[in-house]
Image (tube, rainbow, N blue to C red; front, side, top):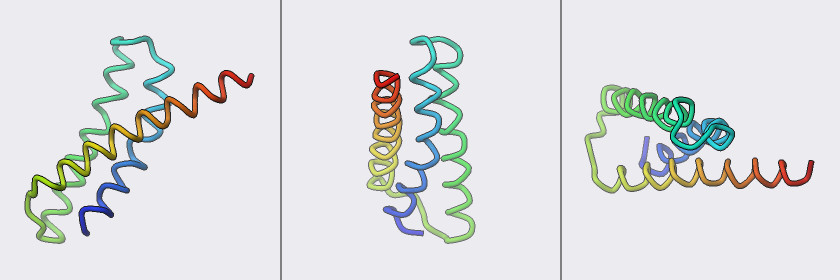
Length: 87
């Protein structure tokens, strides 16, 4: 699995948690969980990727993953706020 594919998977994994994060109170327990639960799944996916595809650690992949994660959280927040405004 290449870096771009992995970043796309990270994006779609973090996206629903972005909706949860934006509905939670800032720095509450739910807000923290919405940010950190997908990180656990991303780490497990990275371990799976290393074991089955023999792809080692690359710094550029960390950059792709961080950008994908943050953009998924941000985009989910924007979409939630847009739908909330239309109600």
